[in-house]
Length: 239
Image (cartoon, rainbow, N blue to C red; front, side, top):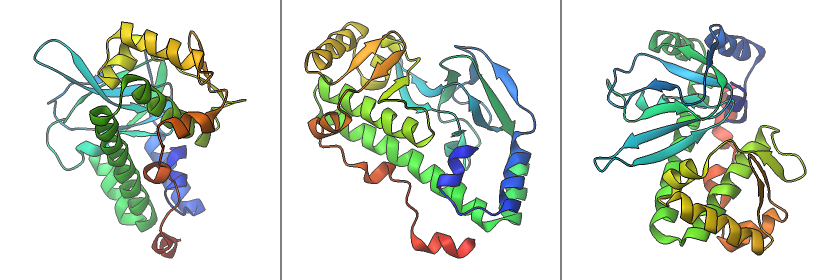
């Protein structure tokens, strides 16, 4: 759960407790559904390897992708206070997840206020990403939506050491990107071409490069407050 270290000040004991949530890793395949929307909430998962996404199936047969999960992310924490799933979750590519239960989470909360605070901070940041998505889906043109989406992924991947020379592996298909941004696959393809012609994005199959990330950020007036990992000073009192 490498991402949690960014959201809390952790002691050696805290880190050992976290490892206890990752004792039962399970290999999963691309396209595998981890759980369906409205299913009982019986476990959560840490992404160890691979990417996943949460989604809602709509009445017209289309899908809306809500969030993309990267290695180190906790899946399902939004469902913590509910008895049924708010969304389905599926794998984007092959990977490894570590499931854990409510009981394990309650035990962790009881033993470490720092971890409880860190997991709360993680959940709040996940909600902030969804809120930001709502803003740019409602107000941005297609090329701005894609630019914002790519720059956000770039920042998230950079924080886990998955960016090299402004490039990163992105296993999302054009259809999946379209489902996240409310665009058709054809429109996504055209928009990638537009950003490429502007010198902002180079995509070669599953490898994406942002030649000038700052220019991409300026295009959409990207405000990274919602994705900033800095914790309020009060969190340090749990150390």
